[in-house]
Image 1 (cartoon, rainbow over the protein chains, first blue to last red):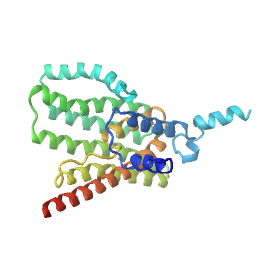
Image 2: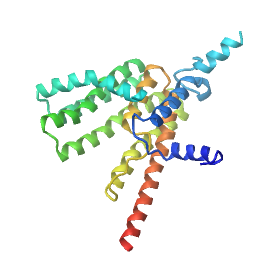
Image 3: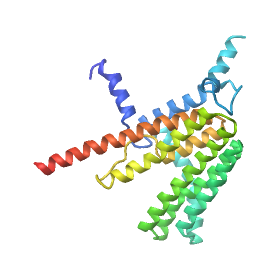
Image 4: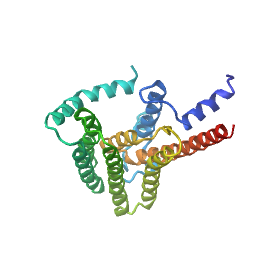
Length: 66
Length: 200
């Protein structure tokens, strides 16, 4: 497998999902999802219920901009 | 053991006690399934009123019933074709109760954008189970795609407890679209293979 085709294969396997639960691929996907859910500032998504809450990225930006 | 495997094993400890209790009381699994949907409707009501944390706790209770019905049926020797059918139908109503609760909430707040996001997520969540059921009438197995019911339920709970429902709806929506596409692709491939084998 070449380094050129590796990202394409990873993307294809993420899209065409055939892995079982409790595999390392499943764990990786779960972590990516949790990162998206918790790290993305709610304002970026226009979250109607979490407006004004910073999210982890917003919190980190606020921390460094002080 | 993987991270998600360890969490699953940890959750099984209290569930085994509840399953044991239901078996000892000889509660019929179809009754457990029905109680699950009723509690999910209550969770949907709490989502509709914006009380996410309460809805999260109610979802935990509802999904305990959803989860244990099959196990109780096995242990009681009450596994039946109708039980499987009843469980699948009731599960769809449980899903719909939660989505409809959120649609009401966003509509009431005038957020038509999230009414649409939730509606699309709901449509593809339903299509996820429909495509599998229909495919398995044509091919032996169609279990591909990430976003199945357990993943949806856990995501709903995470969204409710951490007040990140918008992000959760995006994840459910996008990954449900992929899951439906995966099932269509797999069915197309398998049917072509079966036709080629029949012709040979």
